[in-house]
Amino acid sequence: MKERAILAGLFLLCLVAGLFAALRMAWSIIASPARAWKLSVAFDQLGNAAANGDEDETISSRAAKARRAGRRWGCLLCGLLDRIDPDHCEKSIEHDEGKPYAADPAADLVASAAPAAAAVGDR
Image 1 (cartoon, rainbow, N blue to C red):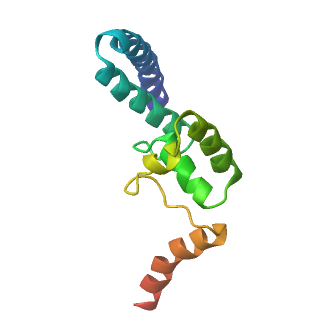
Image 2: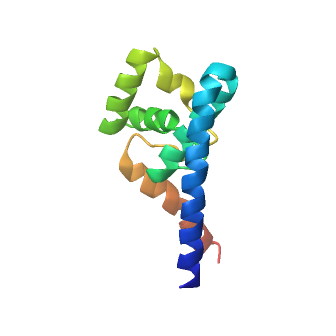
């Protein structure tokens, strides 16, 4: 119960912070475009985290990895983004953030199981 109360309080603080960041971004578009770009990346990462992605990876990076793996949503999103900014998704890949997508979804399972199997065999 105490944890839920703390989370409810944090939720309210997040609402205030989000509103402040949105207002600051609107002002920064005029006063400081460099700050506006930083805030847009922060919102991008927030959106990715809200969609169960890595909190430090942008949606564009995640979509590019998904497209490389042949996942439909990545192909669709990158197709749209690449119309606005040619080659956007490929330029946005963050190899050190998020999970690397394998071309075969079963390969993800094999790769994640391999270290565990090796550890069992070492005993």
